[in-house]
Image (cartoon, rainbow, N blue to C red; front, side, top):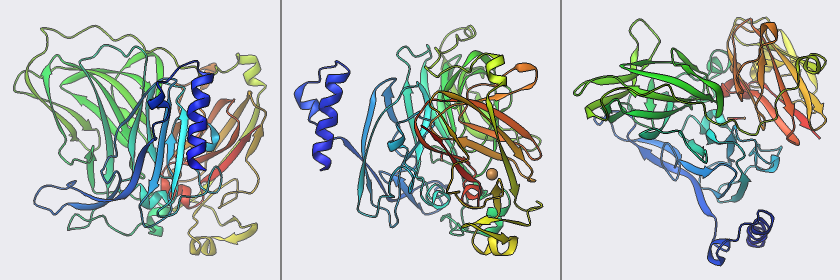
Length: 463
Ligand code: C2O
Ligand code: CU
């Protein structure tokens, strides 16, 4: 069954794209991507390696690269002791490939497999992670980068992917097993005590002075909001959540909520023998997230401001008058510690906060603490919808829309950059607009993954 489907797809693509594959390529088995337990030296060498779960047993998993418009085909093989799926975060994907258990597919059981096969329409920096028990599986190390290359990438000396993760380790550097801790779920989520870049707690890269790098930052933390600054290097933000900015913006403090990405172009300023840093802006002096050690020099001076990346084929928002008459749906966010939520609907009945907490729920969207049977909204394909996210909690939330990129509507008719995840601060109301042009059922949830598990999850339908 799987074999014939794969052959059929390979054959049909060769016809529909007009590309003729050499016979052996068209018939080649798709590569596998295994989720399995492994070990990783994420803590300093004096500790034993940490037992993790990773794609191909590594953390991060392999960097998957495709060219814009190409297909990615991977047979996901689950060798974990629990069911899992892969969600391709930020890809405007065919709904059937979105990896949401109970919605777009069944969770893949231990020993099972699932063929993911999709086209990546937009160039940029994306990532993949499980969408089942994400609060445990992501925290154990299941994530990797998915890079969709521009047909003409910007000129840099190199392109580096930096997956930044926040681990909660016990004293022996094993992963703290208190995944379901209700205190975390009702506060800021599972915050860790050990930061890594590409699975390394002391991430270093050897560079040259005046070398120009593209850095693709990906925040894979369960819940930590990162605040990143450049030291001894200058740089520009060229894309957010995979989507190019209209013009590069000087990189000052870059906020990366869970799941958010930023593409930077940086020029190393530190001299031969010196160091440059990506530093956390937390605290007075901050600490190094990544260290760039400088040997020699790439050229005699820094280069000009980079040009913008070419835009992706995302449908533009309609003109102001049409946009202002677009349908608005409210999404009221309530609950959490120091919140006022006294009760919410769960499983179709109204429940008090104590009972909700007993069921692992602490938050609600529009008064509902579990996935509603009915969608938040149903849109006709191509309709522009507006969602007003009203954060009545005492916590920030990283709101993520599946299958689409949206813009925030700002004051004076301005709009924010295209994003797939937006940080909505405590007490804030943020309105987004999106052209709902990707048919299917799509999630809208907080990407602080404990919050989504504890109630901050809903969905919308595009038909
Ligand atoms: Cu990155 Cu619904 O997820
Ligand atoms: Cu949240």
